[in-house]
Length: 118
Image 1 (cartoon, helix red, strand yellow):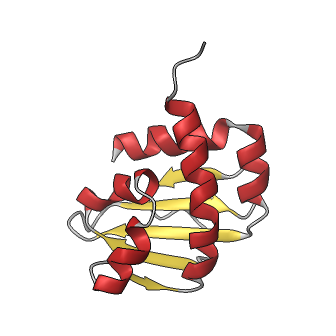
Image 2 (cartoon, rainbow, N blue to C red):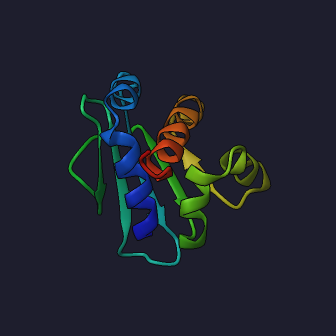
């Protein structure tokens, strides 16, 4: 999960990405099913957006439940989250389609942050 925070932190450090996802107005809480005391909160309801470990104080719009092994895949693999939802391996509540529209932006930011500086 540390890599997830590194990837997402890198994406959110990009001003253009931060501005685009901050406009989504979403607060996403990811509950880790095999680590019941762990959660991730994405505050995409502000600029700059932020990511927090734990149940950060906020009214949650989208709630996801997935195993720790799947957390990185949400950011790294296009199509992963919708396929896992369809297969019933990820449970959700709230406007998840709105999150699915923001994920490609976060993914692009994470990819850009992983590239070595020239």
